[in-house]
Amino acid sequence: MRREQVFWGWGEPGAGPSLPGHATAFLRDELGVDGAVVARPVALEQVRLREPALDTGLLERLDAITGSVRTDREARVLRCRGKSYLDLLAQRAGACEDAPDAVVAPADHDQAAAVLQACAEAGVAVVPFGGGTSVVGGLEPLRGPFEALISLDLGRMDGLLGVDERSLTAVLAPGVRLPEADRALAAHGLTLGHVPQSYEWATVGGCVATRSSGQASTGYGRIDANLVAVRCATPLGELATLAAPASAAGPDLRQLVAGSEGVLGVITAATLRVHPLPEARRHEGWLVASFEQGCETLRQLEQAGAAPDIARLSDEDETRYTLALAGLPAAARRALGGRCLLVAGWEGSAEEVERRRRVARPRLASRRLGARWEHSRFAGPHLRDDLLDRGVMVETLETATSWSNLAALRAAVRAALPGTLTGCHVSHLYPTGASLYFTVLARQEGDPAAQWRALKAAATDAIAAAGGTLTHHHAVGRDHAPWMPAEAGDLGVGILRALKERCDPAGVMNPGKLLP
Ligand SMILES: Cc1cc2nc3c(=O)[nH]c(=O)nc-3n(C[C@H](O)[C@H](O)[C@H](O)COP(=O)(O)OP(=O)(O)OC[C@H]3O[C@@H](n4cnc5c(N)ncnc54)[C@H](O)[C@@H]3O)c2cc1C
Image (cartoon, rainbow, N blue to C red):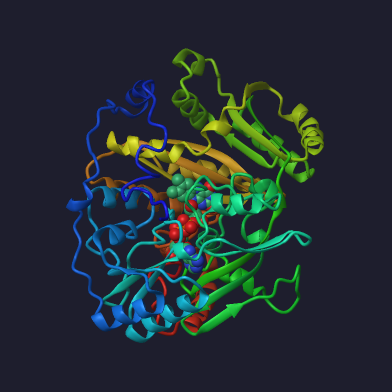
């Protein structure tokens, strides 16, 4: 039996850390929230669902193809949405009226292709479901012009399909979760080197479909940079690319599938470049004099080819609340005097790690803090559930831009989020620029969903106006789709639309996502 997350939050029940006692003072002082529990998620039996709208003929056909069709309450509620703040507000309130009419789980490429064909013929929308960790409304059960919708659950298509140790490539099934992929690769002395904060649950197919970035992507590269070949089932047939190391045979079809977010078809296998398991891992925390100085140091290191594999520089606000939640007393936090937290990590052979640390350390050194980050790198999403219980609005957004524009973009986003406590960090470095990741906290007011939508729209407008990308790694989904013309231009959006019409003429694949 595949492990499942709770339908209203992160992880399995009781699996993660809870808000520490000392967080109460922080919530009171910074957000005006008294820390008492004000709202709990509804029980599964209280979730509101409509009767499934799929006709019996199609259900029987899908069952004959896959032998795995579920229409029960639990399956439909668990496949209803992803894990954004808006998703969690709706799931906690039990608002699943639009939940998928059925959850269909193919076992292989041919079954997936047959399901897509059946749904295209019947006019039934299909939402591919990987790990369910989308934070941009990528799994929202939007039917478009259709009456019924299935969730295409890729959980049965998991596992390592092949390894080429000599070429350092691996073929992975789409539904394999990242820890399981790494466990299978470890038997060959290899790793994906892909560790997003959603690592525990995200799948290989979902990561490719959203062009995900991991915490060590500065070192190992984003998932799209490691994509060697891809196989995709569309309602109109198969799209597959060759596993050549490089090619000049026209535009790169792999990269049309990467980031296609299920609107063209379903990724049924991905060949990824893999990496030798690092012999040594070294993570360190530092305090640097200011955010600006830290950015400058990271730029110089990156452009000199000496950046750490993990580099995460928090601004003053994020430093303050990170250390508050870690238990640093208020007086010690005040003594920081504007200094900012920088986490740096190196992975590789012991010798290589030492050599690279020696190059970077003189430039980083201000005050060393130790290596606590490593132990809490997956804690944030668990704490979010506790914050929601206490009436706190908590969500993240992200972008990327050139080094020259980084400070202006950060200022523009912060200015668009008045009345919030917004922390920011730089986390993925490139020779030409970096990403900015914002965590926004506030006391919930009035209609919490409307409160966040207004802030998110203002922040996204500000990002577009200031020349940042709509998204560096969370993808487009439903939430960013209205801004796609600002990012890609009308012709760019038209090209993507033409591509979709060619692969999915009936328009059943993930309606309302990626394209406005
Ligand atoms: C707490 C938290 C932390 C996160 N941290 C990061 C991070 O550090 N880096 C990062 O990049 N992202 C992060 N994310 C976002 C999310 O984890 C990524 O977008 C991830 O790539 C989604 O993978 P998934 O398997 O969960 O896909 P899903 O959420 O199941 O699907 C994502 C989208 O892709 C489509 N899809 C899924 N599988 C396929 C397939 N096989 N073929 C075609 N389409 C498919 C879905 O229909 C959907 O539109 C985070 C999310 C959360 C909740």
